[in-house]
Length: 440
Image 1: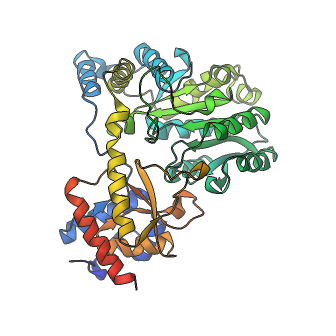
Image 2: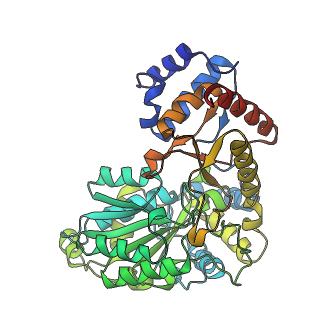
Image 3: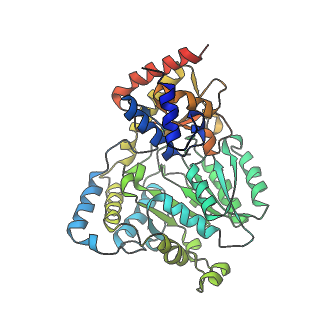
């Protein structure tokens, strides 16, 4: 049974343009998924999937019902409003107020086709607002595709591993990058994908203050909003709220996706919540390029987003509006619902440590243990992430190498979402066999 036949695995990798399993570390996440699916079909052995950050909970029924109703009312034949339907703009604004504690007016709430489109559009505009600023700064580890987007757009990328610069050390590191005058904007997720580390209010204050000082736009990815389960959050309009850089600077945009909070990934719905100061700001370079007043919000919506898509699917906008409204009114407790990922990650990490693995990004700020949640990181001995990936695939376990995320530490990123109750025992057996074969 395990390990799987080497020749079969290598041939499957070749079918996907790789020479063998040793090149899997360079594969994209979707390419790795394809390899694993084909191996499953060829062997009849189901993998324990930890590679794809896909929700493992049912989509919120309130969203489904709202989409169904919108389609029955004929919205499927109508182009959606690219700025967002009024219901979504209102309840998106209320959602940010209820769970992040920020006041973002309705006109600064804009729907996007997932946070992927939001990031692409924002990075595109960042590349155009100042000829002297040609770089986006990433706080690593990060979601690899966001850097890939910058490569597609043609804007430079700079980065540093946040684990090496926590607390006050973050200020000196940011100053070092910002002083070059080349940083147009910076992007980070909080909680972090993949390490699940969380920036503190003190660190967010540093980011916000320096962003204002050096005129750098901050893109805050809140895909896992209020999913730091170490704190009791999630009561609408009550503290503690999601920590946010928006309390410390006007130069910021927040990306909020329905994918993980409401398990609505398949419908590709998200919003950006734009600080009104930034939204109204006019840039001479945008005015010259597009022949208008150069306002950030209008150029973002009517030039960049319109070039990418004629708006977000009409029914999806109604779904997001309904889910935001239900959350604000206490009818959906998305924080309690997603706590299931905390339970799953805790069990998986226990199994891994028992079988010779270790948690790579194990400490948060102030030496606190990193919380359990959607993602986690793991290593084995002093192996590189690529070495682990190349071996674990023969044992029916798939995850991605941390190197692809910009991490300075070696290991792999796992996602707890897809594991089923009946797979914990099987994971334990496979990792025990792996450790028996390589632990000597």
